[in-house]
Length: 261
Image 1: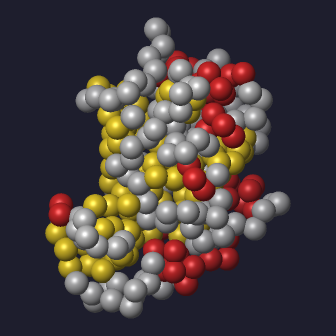
Image 2: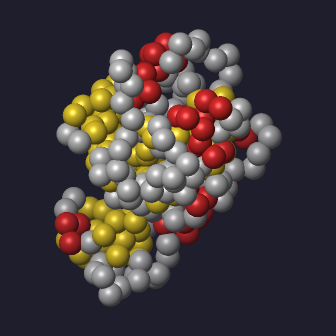
Image 3: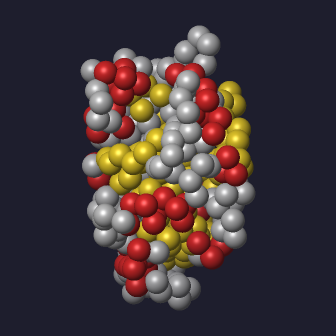
């Protein structure tokens, strides 16, 4: 299933449903995406159907209990930053307020001068510590704060710094999460074009590592790291500016596209 949260029209409240081709069908029982993640219920919805092109997609789960980021988890990205592949996952956390929908916008705080993109495969947790599905995410990063502050909470977790979606594709529809093409464009220019096969630590390994000390909850997100091609690694470096538009697409999972404000 492709689980989505959406607004049918400007006058409507958000509802949840399943994306089917060019339509989205609402859950008639009023259940949310989080309800379905927690219960594991995959019963097809039988509510009203809407044209996908006519609705506004929101973050599938607006306020996850927890957001986890993973640093240097692609071999080539570690190399482009001058680092070496880590021996164990580098985990950091972001507050739930970092989440925004697949169309953003991402709002750059005045204190940030070096804003960067990171196209990423996002794990979405279900009940019992199991992976429920996957989504597309941008781990927006303030490189200036990241370099001068040893903890990355402010650099990675500012409000709106985690747009994701456009929906959650359940794990049964993703045979191999390490065999997906990931691409990122900035203003139509292709910047990242890689395969999740380059991941150092697989989704299963990341979830097992975090779960050694933390009880993961339904709706929690794990951003699995970014491949090579970030702006900070270019020569010369190219950081985001107000008005830039970032599009991130992952094979089989859809795409998100958001502006910088």
